[in-house]
Length: 488
Image (cartoon, rainbow, N blue to C red; front, side, top):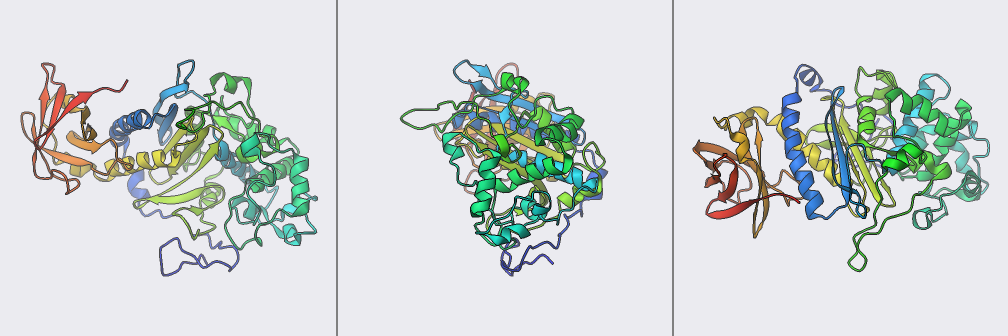
C-alpha cells in the first residue's frame, strides 16, 4: 500500500521500494459537478484572473505571457499579454508559440500509454527488453529499471547526463546518451527515491521508437498531435511554429536587462523537453484528459495515469504516470510544468469539474507555477463561494461601473463583480485571494467591507466616486483615497 507517516499527508517512509499502491483520486464531488453547470461562475472568475495577470505582467515587467482556460469541451478564455518580441513590439496572443520544455513529457507519457492500450508494451517491463544497449558494468542495477520507473522518475537516473546543454545550448545525440548509460548514469538505486530525470524521458522516447518502428517525432505527431487537431505543436521547430514563436528572454539583470536566446534544438532529448506549442493547442490536450473524450486514450487508461505512484517526501506534489498531482484547497489537480532557455510553462486540470488552465511565459525569471496556482485559487474561490457572494448582490443595472483598478501611494487594488457582488482584491499580493474583501451594498455608491484581512478595514465604509457615465474614478476605503488607473 501507499505509505504515509504520522506527519503531513505527503510524508512517506522511503527505502521500501516503489510506493505503488495506486491511491485513486478522490471523486467525492464528481456527481455534484456533473450535474452543475459552472459556466457562469467560471466566466466571472476569468474577469478576476484577467485583471490579475495583466497587472502581474505590468508590475513584474515580464515580456509576455499567454493563458488558456477550458471547461468541459470548450475553451472558455484565451488571451495573450505583453509582447512575444520586445524589440519588434510584436504582441503576444493566444496563438503565440512558446517552448514548453518539460511539458513535453506529457506527450511522451501519452504516447507510451497509447502503446500500452494496444498491448505492445507493459509498464513493468524492463527498459532493456526494448533497448538492448541499456546496461552498465559500472551500475549493474541499470538492467532492472522498468518503464514505470522512467515514467515516475523513480529509476535513480541522474537528471541530465554529463553534457552542459542547459548552458551551452548543445543538446546531446543518442550516442552520447548511450555512452553515459554504459559508464554509469545512476545516482541512486532504482525504486528507492524520487529523482527527476530528463535522461529517463529521453529513454522513453527511444522506447516509443523501438516499439512502434517509427521515429519518436513521427509517432507522437500521428497519435497525439494530429488527433487533437493541434496545428502549432511539435517536438521540433517547424516552420509554422517558428513563424509564431515568441522570443525567449533571459533574466532581467540590473546590468544588462533582458536578452533573447537563440532557437535551440533538443535532438534526442525532444521527448523530455523539445516541444513547442500555444495555449489554443494545449487547451485541446487538457480537454482530452477529461472522461468522455476518447480522442487519445480510453477513460480507464486516463484514470490509470492519474493514480498516485509515489508520495514525495518534499514539496506538496506527488507523482503519477507522467503527471504531477496536488491539491488546491480540497480539489485535486493534475499537470506539469517546464523551464527552457527563455521560457516557462505550467498547466493543471481538475477531472471532477472538467476545468483546466495553461500558462506560457517567455521569460526565465518568473514562476509560471505561481501564475497557474493563483488562477486555480481564483477559480476554486468563485465556484465554492458563489452562493455566498449573492448575499451581497448590488441591485443596479450599472454594477460594471464599479470595476477597475485603483492606485494609492500604498499600492494597487482592483474591484471585480462576482455574482452581482462587488469585491476588492490586492493586486500586489502573491496569492490573489490574500486581501480579497467582499463589500455589502448600503445604497448609492456606498458599501461596507464585510470580510477580508482583519488588519485592514473590515466593518468600515467603502465608497466610489463615479463620473456621469457611472464609471468609478475614485475609491475610498475607510478614509483612504485611491484613483482609477489603466495599464499601458
